[in-house]
Length: 492
Image (cartoon, rainbow, N blue to C red; front, top):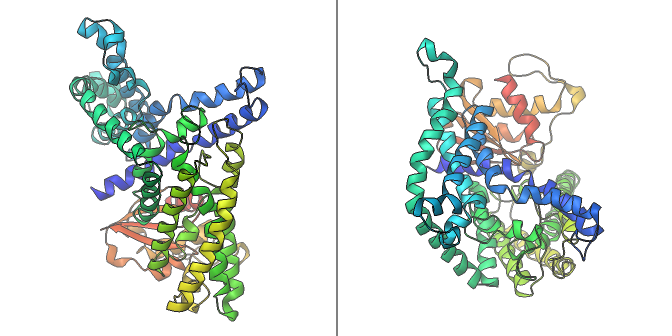
């Protein structure tokens, strides 16, 4: 079950990856026409409508993305199945169709059916069912006279009939589930700044397991009525409130973690300081510019768990403070400088530049707290121990060294070298079941987890190794993970 949820979290990243495009388009449009929101400028309206086209169809994007991401071989037929499934369910359960079934005017149909076409939860449900159907029936063999419809072509057809049954279940269950979720959303919103702080704390705490993606979907998308990202970039909702589940991340990612990096650099031993500095500078700059924090977080997550709990607490505190003062900004990808600049152009953003002031305070907090804890407890953060630096700060071998691989060949590419070292550390080709990746991590299933050599894996330059379940391994590579994953797949 844990593996399934983690795979689902990984698959969320495919539909989420399109959000930066929406943010960029909307940011440009709002910058051109900040008062008319596209109504007073044809060019601004062009950009805003283009960005809105993504936000207005997130539900179907999630259905297609999850169907593809959860499929066993990432084939386009799975994505088509997700599309077909979503269309069948939403067209049979929209307000007009339900009104016809019930023999009443559309305006008398319950609110749950009026929002079903744009509800991300429906997209998630149909996407997951579609992936399960694809994994089960994609190798189906039919008699010769129906051979054309065998295999992958059979899956969308099967999905149509399965979705008829699903529609019947949702006809009864959806209004009950919608009301339950709506009340949950109202309860969370009713907690105000405290609710934002609780969310921020658990968001960081769940990162080692990869389950934070599932938590994020509750607050960021339209699953329980909060839809913080969609509403922010559409500039809908209440100014000072919409964006509260995003704003508090900016002070942490742009300032807090760089402050922690500086503390770790200053506490590093003199002979290791240069090597530690190069690693910490790279991860801090990545967090500041893009909001990708895992390379930084994994540099101390397992070496000093207390620091990570402090980091989670400070993230919750930042979310609470930003929500309390109603300083809001939003992101399409993550809370880095690029997204911050774009979000300041969105009309519903409220005093976003105060988040920079808050960030400077958190830079000092992180620096002082991290430095004090590291020195008092003599924690082995990067640069304080030779072996730790080798594990967490190792870089891949330069291209011109071209070392021999485990199979005796030569490599002329740094990603090939890194992939080969990781492959050896995972027990070799014969021990690998599947290889996949998300934003910064390789997600690998192995046959025998006792063959894993974490030390060998970290010599590749990996920032960390996580074992969320038996036979399930995650290797934190960084933002270039896709290239390493593709090399590993090629080697396999």
